[in-house]
Image (cartoon, rainbow over all chains, first blue to last red; front, side):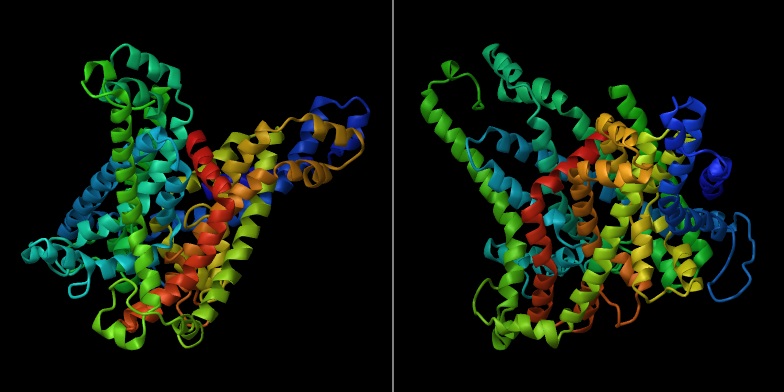
Amino acid sequence: MAGSGTNVVSRSSKESAGGIGRLTRGRRGRAARTIRQGELRTAALFIAPALALYALFMLIPFANSIYFSLTNWNGATALKEFVGLDNYIAMFRDPTLYLALRNNVVWIVLGTAAPVVLGLMLALVLWTVPRGALFFRTVFFLPFILPIVVVGLVWGWIYHPLFGVLNRVLATVGLESLGRGWLGDASTALVATLVAAIWGAFGFVTVLLYTALQNVNTDMVDAAKVDGATWFERARFVVIPAIAPVLTLVTAITLIGGFAVIDFILIMTGGGPGNASTVLGYYAYENGFELNRLGYGSALSMFITVLSLVAAVAFVKFRERER
Amino acid sequence: MERGAPAVASGVSPRVKNIGAAAFKYAILILFAVITLYPLLLVVSTALKDPTDITTDPFALFTSLDVGTLGDAWTLGGFGGYAFNTVYITLPTVAGVIVLSTLAGYALARFEFPMRNLVFFTFMLGLMIPFTSVMIPLFYLLRDLQLLGSLWAVILPGVAGSAGFGVPLGVFLMRSFYQDLPGELAEAARVDGATEFQVFRRVMLPLSAPGVAVLGVLVFFQTWNQFLMPLLFLPGEENRPLSTGLYIFASGRTQEYELIAAGSIIMIVPVVIIFVIFQRQFVKGITAGALKG
């Protein structure tokens, strides 16, 4: 991919190197072919810096990721021993892969459904209140712009076994027995982390849907109401279809990102306790940077890429059909 | 536009029903506002606690008021130095993305040349490749280029979009922005004898200022907040930014909640200020990018 990308530029600048500049020719009635040559050269100059940097730090590492995944390199030796598909075979026999994949699926399903349901509800409410919508919109959006580090730390305090507000609230309502160190308990670590992520995302979804609602024709809604449609019927058959593209989009963003999630897990649980809250991205990080199993880590990262790309392509297809 | 079944059908008068419905809606909004704001208040309250209070009850809201902690975090906690590093990373990244993507986006929107679509889709691939897929080789590439540990180790991949956004997002946004601009002005400048670069620099770039603002704000947030790249590529203390500074501080000095909270505030305040100023651009950028994609 890197090769074909850079070729476009280098070849086009060569072709036009001897060509006459666009402007000199342009004054004389500008032959279409000459303009094209001038444009080739200018376009190449305009695009080259961005493409060069992008190729160096994105396309080449990506290609190397594929290469590394076919070796058993540990990062220290000079030689990378080619092992074919061994890493991939080992990967699909690794029980931790399935644990991580299951956690990713939980993360994606809950992490998509919760913000979309909450966001849709809040957007509809915001859309219909007489005043104050702007204020609440701003408040809801705040968590989305916060650094994940800060979100993770603060939610760690909320989940604190001794001082955390969650256990205190549970104790106050007589559910003290449910109290625990939420991030240190294998049965709750993943979901507790996910709740922090949902807290960070629902306002984003709300604002996106609220913006989409601004374009909904209120006459249609009123007409449906005159015809006797209930609140639910109006939402289901008039409003939601009108904002369906944005709903699909929000779902796609969380879906595609959901396979690659890593920050929240790394900051809040470190995949633990044990491997209880590990996800594919964290498992790849662990192998690549802590266990020095670069080949295996790269194979995992290729697996993530494939899942993300499949999700992205499925989304594009779905959108095309929607239109 | 009030909700609920038609008033005629129910026994209650429409007016009372309206008030009831509105009250219910505001109750929902206030509930979620509290859920949204509580963690933020928790940070502020914890940062304001005095040392004795922090050991007895660190997370009770606003039980003491000690404003000295912020200064301690800035100097003793080292967050002042981290803050400068964050600035040194963020500003060049934002500038780099803007310069490279306006140029490339303009060319992709305005010039005809072979394989234009291929170049564009090559850039768009970058929006779909997650950071996890490049992080391991990127580490060794930076090591071989002897950039590991220097600010460039985060700035250059940041501009390239290795950890998301960057040039791929910029090219995407700016290309569609330039496609929507009318071409007559550029044509007029060309007739007046301006070079292609002058046309871009003097005519088209100023016209695209709103698009540039959107892009700049998006990249600012992402770069200021980014965590993984500094964690992996800036291992030393010297160039450590706020994100990893805070993370490493919090994992080492677990009991000093007031300093962790104060460090969080130092990191959050610029973000919130920029957000309040550029809220419109930010929301517009997110939605425009999202809707067109």
